[in-house]
Image (cartoon, rainbow, N blue to C red; front, side, top):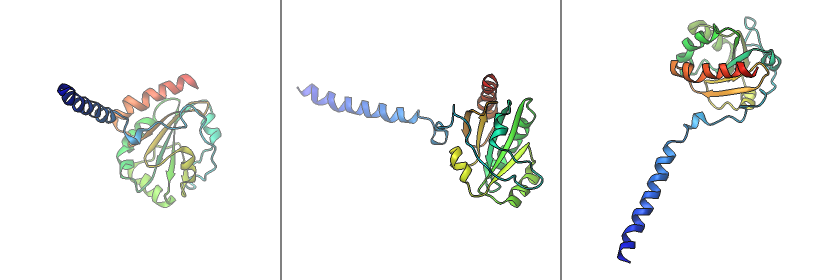
Length: 180
C-alpha cells in the first residue's frame, strides 16, 4: 500500500510531462491548416492597385497555370524581407505571381514596390480587407499556391525565406502542376 502512494504521484507527473512535451510538437499557430486547401479559391471583385497594374479575377486563377498569390502590405516589415524570394518566384515557367495588397493605400503600396521591386504580374487592392477575410488571411504576408483549375493547394503564413521557398513553396508548386 505504501508503494502505491509513491507510484501514483510519479505516474501523474509522467502523464502531465508527456502532455506538455507533446503540445510543443504542435504546428506553430501561424501555420494552422487553411479551410481553403483542397477547395476552389474564393470569388472576389477588387480593383487593380492603380492604372499601372493589371488586376485579376477568380477566372484568372482557373486559366490552366499555377498561380502564387502573395498577400502583402507596405506597412509590413516581413513583406520587405521576402521581396528577393518573390523575384525568384516570378521567373518560374508556367507560374503566375499575383499580389493582393491588404489594408493599405494604393500610393503607399506603389512606393513600396518602387523601393523593393515589383515582381507581380497582376496586383489587386483590398483596401478594406474584405476579400482577405474570404481567403482566411489574418496577418501578412501570406502566400497561396493555386492550381490551374483554381483549387487552393497551399497556404503559407509568414515571410518567404530561402528555406521556405525551397522546402515549402516549390514542392507545392510542383504538386499543383500535377493537379492542374
